Picture 1 (cartoon, rainbow over the protein chains, first blue to last red):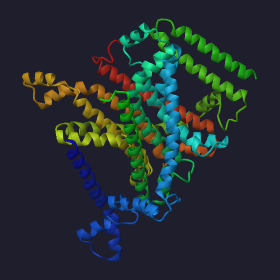
Picture 2: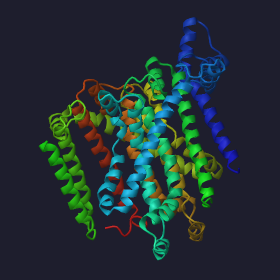
Picture 3: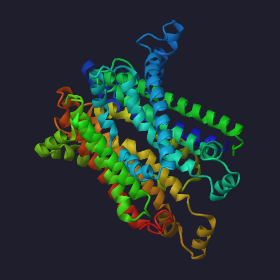
Picture 4: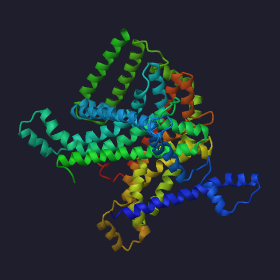
Length: 291
Length: 281
């Protein structure tokens, strides 16, 4: 709680900065307009104009808020929450490929981690490539993966989910390898004195002790997975999803639409990461590992 | 049929060599050779699968074709590399990491700011910042300046958070020692806290290398002059010349790993005293 005041101050400072930046960035257009209309703009008129333009360079926060409300809350009130004009619909599309990619990535990551921990050959040959795979700007491949998979007849969710998967498996592999190796020599020896088989050792010792590491990685993986889904929606002229909204907005200069999609994406990321946080707290509490 | 059999045979052979090598005591050579052999078998199996199953090169070109294309169009690839990696990514990386570093030092002086900015910075670092790309392209135009701006925004927060955390990594005992030496704020910063923060700073720098290239390439999807890696990828996909796309990806991969490797090397030279670097040959 002692952090609340500083955080609120910083957030307030961001909003003040945002409003000020909106005035500065939108002022040339406002002045231009006034000059053509032959009116002299006072300071307060200038400010109010820069905060209410149709296609501002930087929309003011309340304009973005109004747009988000118009495309979410107001749509729900009209009973058209899932129409194509609603951001809820687009968020849902992005969310579904994020979730699918996240699940696939987590599964792949855990499988690889188990292989790496239990097989020396795999440890030495795969692990360097797992690390190298992340120095490759993989998002660059995104358009190609989607086109290629489309050509083979796989379209819809799966191609986007593949990109999310690629981005999200890495943190899981690294975290899980660390976690599965976290039991100390003492604990492993104890298991051996109990004559535990290697599967018992895995299920009773290694897997439980990797849980804190797993959840930390899952949070990173979820954020990465969302980025993957959004970028996956960019290239192929996708018609739905937050990425498609961004692209459409940038084609038609609808800055307010871009910002509202951006804020929605941020909210979605925050919700998903918080969800994993809750899951983490519950699981660790049940396992008696809560700090 | 022959290709498929060859693929399976090479895979088995590679795996066998690797399992023999990895069960020997690890030396520097085996630690290099094992991943190398694994990578080579992977490329060969790719070639064998593409030829064996007669997969259309439009879907997945074989590595030999990519290599040929790479050799044939080095001029274009170099031009794109300069446009995207040097002008866009590198300048953005330097500006972004530099400002983040200076901001971190400024923030570090005020505990109030630090407590407020760290959680916010952590939150922003998890956001899909890449979505800012269309806005920044709109503000800064189509040329490399807008790409550099995207990179600045992307690398800023991971770098800031890491540096601020690193600057806190000295304990009271060490700081007290500096005080008994009558060292002022700047002296303590330069002689104790910055060196102690180096591992964290390099962690941020390493994360930022990949983010920088990704940012520069993806920003080009939203508009670019008629050169650049992102531009070439998106137009070549449209023309179905997948070999050129893959050649660009090879360039991106080389640039990405080279950049990362360079930062890792500098880290090794500068933080040789840290436990994570000691004991490695």
